[in-house]
Amino acid sequence: SAANRELVQAAIPEAIFIPADDLEALREAAAQTHAVVVGPGLGTGLESEIMLDETLGQGSQPILLDADALNLAAQGSISLRQVGSMRPVLITPHYGEMTRLAPKLVSADSRLDVARALAYECAISVLLKGAPSIVASPAQPILFDTQGSSDLAVAGMGDMLSGVCGALMAQGLEPTIAGAVGLYLCGRAARISERGAGLMPSDVSERIPDVLLEKTDVRGNLPFPFVVFDAEADQ
Image (cartoon, rainbow, N blue to C red):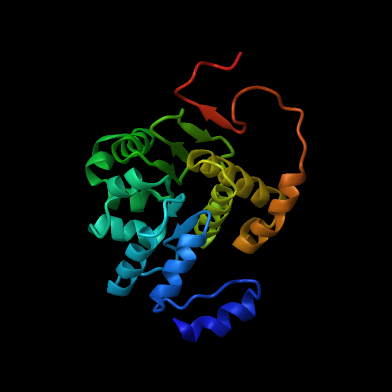
């Protein structure tokens, strides 16, 4: 709401603030973006449903759905299949959110199979967070995060991951690749921060530029540091 403007702009001066109840401003902003991230802090009430519906109704740019946007989808407020038919979509659920989104799939299959099945069913990209995280899409090999760190389980880290993936989509990366690269950037940034149990999302975001500057001698056609399940082995 407008009451939060001073709090947000004091903490993040460069942020562009739009009151939640200004639907015209929301439509205009959503229509002008290169990518949209919806869900963190959204809520699941009627006002939140309206905001989500208005956002989805603007443009055809890539969109990332996380947190309460996924909870609203689980409640039936939106159809992931319908959204996936209109624009590129990346969802970033943890296992609890996936259980609510696709209870029939979760009850019968492994995490990998669940992510793949939902990706095919809805024609979307799925980043299923966990140990390990999995990135699935209908048209590409499934990617399996090999970093194996619990750092990204810290409170608030999922919201930051969504922001990083959304920023990558805004720069032109397709959702599946944005999800994989976002996972790597955040995981690597968490590792080199060396904050241990005191790690916070802001520590990770501050180290992402350092990760981008790192160089490696690794060569090959696999999207390092991921293992590809549905492709021929790298020679």
